[in-house]
Amino acid sequence: MTTRLRVLDDGAWLSVDDTRRVSVSELWRLDAPGFCECDLADLVVENFLDVGVDGRTVTARVYGQCIVCGTKSTVERVPVGRIVDGEFVDIDREGVLSVRRSAAGEPAGDEPDKTTG
Ligand SMILES: [Zn+2]
Image (cartoon, rainbow, N blue to C red; front, side, top):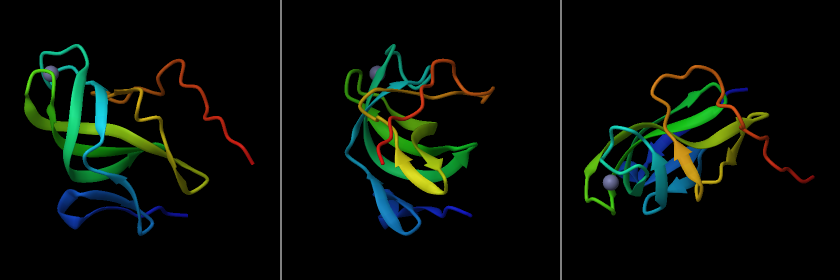
């Protein structure tokens, strides 16, 4: 089963299987060394540039601004969700999103989602 990941509306939405799932204007707390000088960047998402999948993690290339220091830049491979059994599942984007430079296996302490049903 393949999952179709697309950027729609000039970067305003991430679409999964033709359903809009993630929109701009979210505020993300990023652990993204190199994006700006902050330990954690408070990024306002302005544009999605690309979307892909890394293992079972859906990652996006995002343009946005850190509202703490004002840096505007692009972040590569921000995790925004997961593919579970061919379905897109949101991750908790109100927590810290860790942007891994080079994927070297799953991060420790990555607990499975609480699922009901
Ligand atoms: Zn910053």
